[in-house]
Image (cartoon, rainbow, N blue to C red):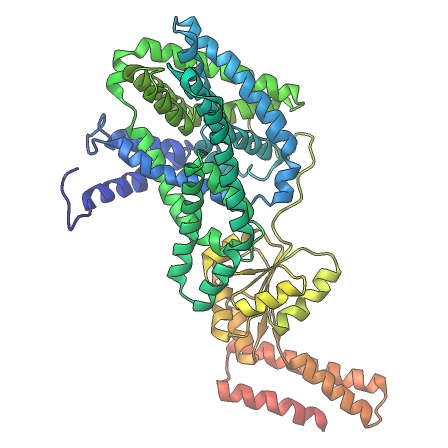
Length: 586
């Protein structure tokens, strides 16, 4: 599209957004999923549809940042201890699947009469599953945290790691590769390891102090810029070290998974991740060159069928070898049968060193894209033929819920006291607070408190509000507490919300906002002080208890009356509160 305004191609932006807004809801309503909607929209507006875009690869290069940010978000959910627990699946299951698929898929090129090196590269590119498509579908299906979903994530991680030795393999197979010395290869490996070491040190010792300074400045846009800087900086650093940008973003996420600012980072990056990932799928749809498909349709058809069938066979066999159930093995092969975005990188490298020519590169790219387009259809067919059972545990215990039992918002003097019986009873508590000094103090006391503004819906989502068993609002800002209660009522109405209130008026506002139990911050402590005075004056313990209970009952009756009709003004409420003590003292 050529029309521009002030240097910004507004028609192109409007077209991309419009295509997504129209296509995705229609495809989701039809049960075909959002991924197929994006792919179809991209094909429709691309050079081989309506022709509104002429260079889809330029958009694809930008949109690959969506994959990078997606892996960063996944990394934030993967604490090092959890990643270590997955090591058998990553380096056992993942490695075996990659090697078996490479061996089988290379046979397709050999069978079609191509030399060994191009056949190996072509088959290896198809081995690399689309992380973007599979992760998006796991998320939509709610399987990302299930054991079967975690095993797929492990395989995807190994495939992302494998891009580095596979690129080295391409360089080794290239004409003239014998000129590359052992010292050159050792230097490349050393640079990669050095890049990882620097990133680990920066994540451990540098990022938290920097974010502490930025949070103290209370400039939200700077925090967002810093979050993007971390993701893209880590990706660029790993690229400079000869590794995968997506792997760099994932590693940065893992390093920050236990950071105080984890929820803030996730909330800031999430909107960009969603937009860029959608743009990635649009660009993939646009990049499907129908002229290449038309000119080589027999070769492409044979390649897609043979590569997909052999990859499915390899995935199923490896899954069963590692004792997966038949249902899980079938679901895995359906989700992972396609080629992935890293195949484009591998084929481009093979083209640059002369292993394949331009026409072969275009043909292989078309094969990958068609396989991507077919994946949502495979999943749809699978779900129709093998509907999900009511209890989809497949004989395996479900993992411990990573979401907190309780989300506590505000860790001041009130929140700290509230948390103590919860911790003492063994409940898992996720705590967010916006006061950096309080966070530093709590961290020094051994508490894990995350930085986050509870009045932001994205922060509440990142902190696990929609998965919590209960939420407690303990902040001392009345207006902010009421706003949080309104957000929670609209977003997660089935989760009970408890709150600290300032007075009776604030309690009424909180109940109207959906809070189940508001507790006035000084009420019970004042009653206890009154009870101690009665004991000092010589009243028996039984009489003291009866008096305090009578005060509570009278207060509850008045509160119910006020809540039902809200018949008192603010001044009347203060008068009623003051009158309680007078009435009961007589």
